[in-house]
Length: 490
Image (tube, rainbow, N blue to C red):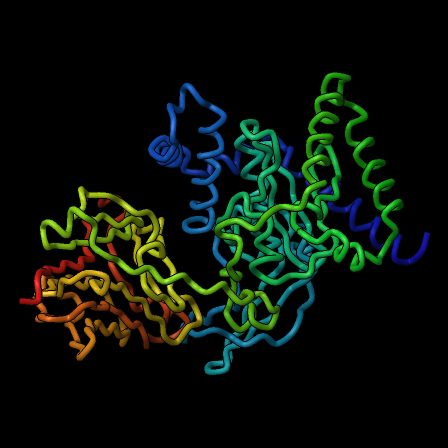
């Protein structure tokens, strides 16, 4: 074999052996004990679209979503750099250190050293590869995240695979009995079934993506790319025939101790998976977004902040027939539900904040599962963001008489939110947090309510300006409100 083939095979073999750690019954019991299963089951029951007892397969998929959310927001933490316990500041990397005997015992052959530039204190970060150790440390980068999350999935009896991307990322796949296919699960991003995220969102040029489980070693690259011909040009480490032979050989070894019926079931499942690969997937909602895990500078250096987004199609609100008759338009928004309600038109609802705004720049909806809060915030790394809502009477013979506005905004540190409401002739600045504030827009044919978020301190500056912050358990209050009275110009 060539040098490249030897290295490739070593990587396949070592990862194929590694996943057997997830099958240890005692370790699975330890992992399961870390999961607040009762709470997750309650959340899954609340969010399941049908009776959990009647549709157990759907309930399992719903529980998986809750598991991802809990793992990212409450259990595991991302490690960028060590923090000085004295100065409470990020320490500087000073290269690699020598692994101790304990480090090596838990698979940490790489150790990062850090030093505080203020007081001179030092710290170290062993890159543990043992999932049992990660249940204790609960921190790391994508390798540690996927390693620990895959173990937890196996502990909860999900059929799970550890997925290795040759362009330096790792995640998990979980088999859905309901859908009869594998679901992409990235615990770092808390996303499920968004396989084109890396190519369409992060801008990665994928080449080899291999999945490992106790039963198989499978080349799953084709689930994560659209242009197969372009990808084949990048796959130049080994021949396709050689790779197929090696993955088949390893899978046969793994299945050698299984019964005939078990092997037949795995073969049928593989046929379904290979059929899925024949047709490239279409990019869907949630896949065109940059990476959110890790320091902004680090993500930028990796080129994973995201590709250019398609421009948002402006939404302009115009009066319905019912509103024309009553001379009133009233729109409210709840961040908890991520939903608008049009009070003036029979309480009709519109899902998702983006589907009601006129313009939006660097804004997203943030949910804090540990604090049970939701709000609109600016995208991490953006010094400024804005969004607006527009109401227009230009196609009618009516004009605006008056507007009443509620502008819910929460700020921390020196974060700033500036609200304005503008008509054709002038703009008026509104007090952040105002409730039912009356604005004279008499004679205007249209108006735009806008909010601009800026400032804040440190790495979390983006989180120091929040619009419509409220508890995710608060399901009957819509704090953001634009209410407009209109009538004849005479």
